[in-house]
Image 1 (cartoon, each protein chain N blue to C red):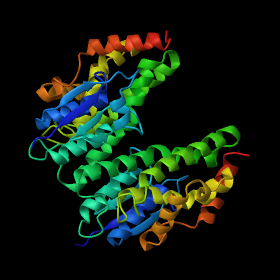
Image 2: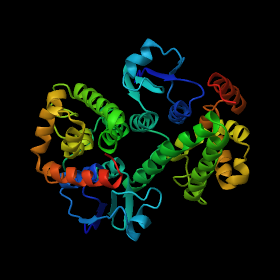
Image 3: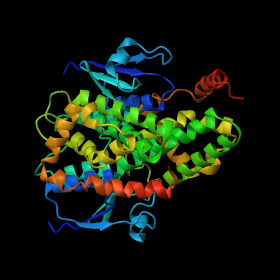
Image 4: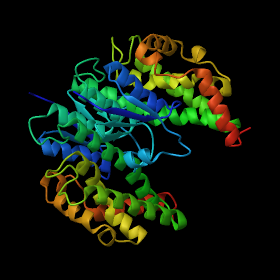
Length: 219
Length: 219
């Protein structure tokens, strides 16, 4: 098809990782461009003038923004393998509901853990654990959120795992102790090459976050 | 098909109105159940245990939550008439992007106008106008956001029009003066029976909001 695919991304972004996983699942070759978020490139500002945020997928010169919208686009365009959303409209709506829940809850709770201290951090930690307990209950005894195969909701959530060491170390808690069933799902996802190769090393994220905390003057 | 469709809704909700428009566009008959949001029904709590919010569409006993997810579901299930999302994946992604922009920006800015006073209200007003100028620019010279026919983005935004009299009166500004092209689009949308019949009277919303302001002790 001669598709030209470029991904504007930043390595620690759990939103960018979602797109990396989707492209890996579909076997799409692409050019990865790391963005300096302190000094955004003219290309990023041109391709996402509204939000000025990564990730942006540029497909044959045309930009698509917002991670879950990009993932749905990838699933619709490269529809010959590894379907990410279910084909049944009701199951699709459920998948969209849970991905939206993750977007509304997980990042903010996680941010309160790593970007604050004291009572605010404790409140964030409690929220983070509660949100994951809700997700663990939704997972139930299924291997993946959508059933037997890795899909949209798994992809939306698993990228946060790369930040777990950071949340756990700063917040002094254990996700294994809090959500053992969810952690079994994490291990299942991490056995997939598309996932394992798209997530950076947890300690590298931790180093990056310690740098941010210093810059923000926390602790 | 013997479909049983129930909508749990609250009359002043711009999110509920989106679902009403989508069902009207598709010609779907349904039972409307007004929720008392101060005293939520056991049915609402059962059907949306996660967010406990309206609107909820109950289709043959199964709940779908979150207005834009419901609208996409309606478009996928009743796909024989009035397509709401474009069929082209790139255009679909653009429609999803703008609907998401509306969700992230318009409600919060509007809320700052009607639920605060003084400097906070003035900041909300400025934000509200800026957001609509961005949307007006995206609309450009097209009759509707997606082009020639009424669709997903139009539906996502037009429901806020029922609150315009409230925002304008409390904030002391005129959308006609600020965004004349967008107001021409409003009039175009309001000529559609599916829209006009789904939006409550603007003065009735204003009365409702004045009651809320009194209850919240504003002014």
